[in-house]
Amino acid sequence: MNFDFSSDQRSLREQARKFLAEHASSTRVRRILEGAAPYDAELWRGMAEMGWMGTAIPETHGGAGFGYLELCVIAEELGRSLAPTPFSSTIYLASEALLLVGSPAQKKRWLPRVAQGEAIGCFALAEGPQVATPGNITTRADDGRVSGTKIPVMDGDVADFAIVVAGEADGRRAGLFLVDLTGAGITRTSVTTVDPTRSHARLVFDGAAAEPLGAPFAGWPLVERLLDRAAVLVAFEQVGGAQAALDMARDYALGRFAFGRQIASFQAIKHKLADIYVAVELARSNAYYGAWALSKDAPELPVAAATARVAATEAYYQAAKENIQVHGGMGFTWEFDCHLHYRRAKLTGLMLGSARRWKDLLVTRLQAGAA
Image (cartoon, rainbow, N blue to C red; front, top):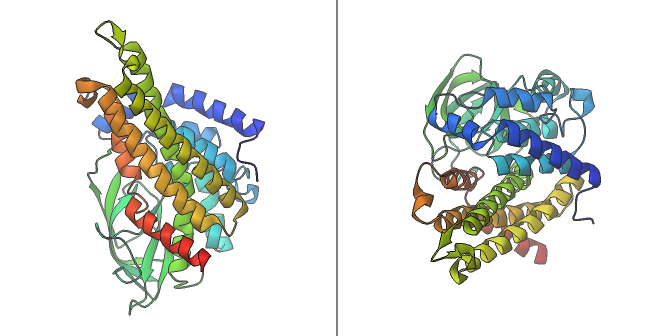
């Protein structure tokens, strides 16, 4: 078990960091935050030219066929740069669902387009603020049609296809369904969230044509499996964002003087930076464990994913919050970039379910393993 990346993977990280420094600066992020565009289309095309969308997609489906470790490397850099693109929803969830249980025809239709950056996907699970469970999913699938309301759906306003979680007519079992969002019976409405650099929408399905993804109504374990895999990748985005917030706080503390001294020399600031560093390193270690489990599809993946998810969510929130404090009164202002990471930390902390949900899952899974 090796908890470090290879020289090739570190080289990929440097290439990604250099590309994003040039094409995903905070100026570009703010352009999406303050404008009407749902995402940075120019950056998205550049990422497609770099081949990032096809990182974990096999060559037989038009991808690069590298693997999940390489995808984790890219995810960390995307989180560090706050890249305003629909990468997470398309690659970690929609594409992953197709890879896991898609039919040969479904893979042939969508995966090459995803790999080329020509198709955007989304994952429609939530139906409001409550935690989605098999018992409260009201969206129904019957005879090749799906009806119901999903909110919020990340990138649902710009996606070409959706992976929809729906139940049988009697609600006994749930399953995944593939819906072409250009078809009839679909209404999309953009909704506002704390982080406008990642757009969200309300999707209303009214008898929209839907194809079962995998065995019809394969059950909740398939949904959980997909979320576990995405949790590891999102954890890397959160670790990247947390590291960026820590770097921002450190640089400001070293350059800001008060009473003739760097504020970094004050004990209170030292403690904040040290606490953030410990949290980020703990999250990074757990994310590496999750990356190993994901790349091997190991039996440890459910526990590793929940651990990575909890540690990364808490580390990113702590780093983003304390970064504002280190900046003092100016940290709250629009002109400083601190709030960009605070927004992203809050959003990524909820996009796959809250930290509380993942803590409960972690406890349940650890108890099951100990029994």
